[in-house]
Image (cartoon, helix red, strand yellow):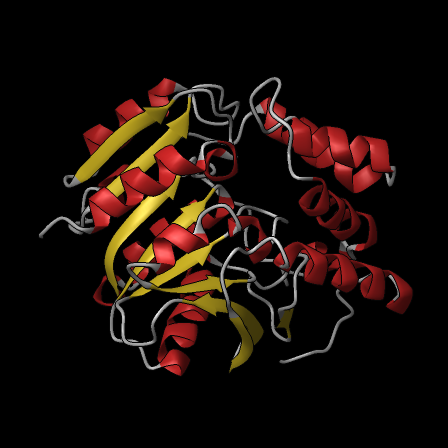
Length: 297
């Protein structure tokens, strides 16, 4: 049964977060439009750019990062595609779930509904971290909707979430302190990298004011977990997987497993990057994505 639940701890906190979200969207270097589509799982917010006549490219952000995180990537990607950057339901952003999204099938059904509402028959999908897991899950459940997928440091997909992830997740859920939340964000990038301050502020406020009951009551989707190897072997669309050489969630073994399990996969390690490689090394990541998406099937 559908149910309304508050996504943020207070109206004041939500207002501060949305102001920071709008400020982060000013980092997008090209014109964009924002709109919502309604699905059976709730209202999904989309930031879109590029020609409406171009082939669609859906962007799925990392956990609790929101679609604003694609500011270093959208200019180059939208020169070739109609970019549709989604705020994932049940995470800080401008989407609002009204129904539990508690199984892998639900996660795919939500994306299928978004694609249907947009009038899209097929799309490319690029996902970072949890967004990568969502992209792979979408390809498993609805291959008819997907042309190609790009996995940027996908969470869990090939190996289980490790102790480091669990420690960071526990700290942000239990300790509502700005210093802790900023340290958690910086733990995902390569040493010495500085994340844009405006984006950092939005990310911190999202965690600071997020209503964690959304998670415990099944509105934030399932926790990513490794997919069954036999199922992965049934993916016959082209897949690109990129990880950073400083990624603390995906060791090189994840790439070895991906190569063994998915028939049509390309893999590459991006130098001087951690888990947030699309922000850390946008030029290299953008170029590799565009080269992959331009290839013939």
